[in-house]
Length: 622
Image (cartoon, rainbow, N blue to C red):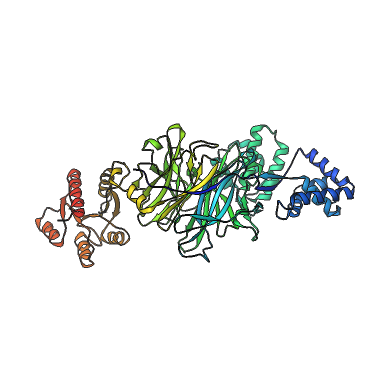
């Protein structure tokens, strides 16, 4: 039986009225210079009249349009110098008019408004009891299918409904600051990860740079390289990719008088001409208690992809940097909201088919990952992926997934990961959490529901989701019902379903690994300890259903371990494993409360039977 899904009436549709003023470069340079010269030579009265008309037509459509014109004039200022004019001697109204000729409007949301991600707003002040202020990011697509990141703010009520703040038509791009220093060796390695490998062209640029360089130095080196090499399509793509990577590290900042819906993160240059892929935002808790918001996304320029990381604490100031490493070179990466065992953790889909989990000491570098989840059910048979960052709950890490089935229909699913070891799946939905209904299946890409991040509020999982890559809506489900479905017996046949948590205490490394391999085949969660002291540390941090323990161990042996557990009233069934044949040892263990005793070398069939018996007795005590 499917889960009861509560769809909200709120729907965000594409809005052609939301426009930004972008720098317009008609090119080639000869044409640009002719335009500038024409404006300079226009009669002053006519120039003033033309400029005032531009102000009347566009001042109510953009915040401080004169500032935009001034900025765009500065983009072509060097051409004014090339023409033999002193820019500072040109009247201000003509400078602004020149800027107006190199400005155009771009409708950022006219084509699609989809793939949302929801997080808690950093500001939770002045709310009524049971309310939560949230920020939702969307992938907005406009003319030419260029995608950007836009935001909406609102308040979630206790009943799961959401009141969104009204958005104005005024939209602001951020001010971009580039101040990053690059290492030449690291830069070359990053190009290799992007599969930009034409050495003859790359060397023309790199030979012009010191071992450490900044964006401006790289910008000049690329300009000179374009004058020296034959600009074939391939060579141009390589040079654009080099320049793009240098642009990847930057800060952007928005004016403090802009509402959340007024801010747009737009592709920073023409080299991101295909736009910004789905951002997955997550509220991240550092070990020192500091909170930061991260988002991963993928930029694409038609030639190569570049995975990126966004960092912010207030949604006014953003730091953007590239993600590196073999395991970061694909779409759909989602960070865990805190470190796991001292490392950053991330869900990704490296091969485009399965879900993987990776760990790293550096949030920007990802070199290791292991298979987490494969398609299992018909509705996800083609491929699976994540639909946002895992959410921490008392029951485990809740990961919303997506699956692709017949007719390329996308549905949302869910899995539950072990809190201490999220490489282990302890629950999984057999049926989709959400599939497109008749109102949601029509659109730019039919039969798709998709999400990039959800939250839990008032025992409800609240999921923003895209409808057929065109518009977005919201729904919620009851957490208890979701957990009951994920861990019900009907899903026990899943190969990823864990039966119980077993602690293995054994000082012999090889034997410890053999036991673990056997238990993993039976789908148990397995934790290892090398002696009684380490076992007590594990017991204090995690819950275990059974302990398998050797007797003769250094530091703290099996008898000392069970004595300590008895003193502290720690009630976990213990099975002793030992090579001792003396019945006195077995008798002593049984007197202390050991429930089973198995001799080495271990007969794993016998061990498995004793484990099953122990677990059954634990669930159904006499």
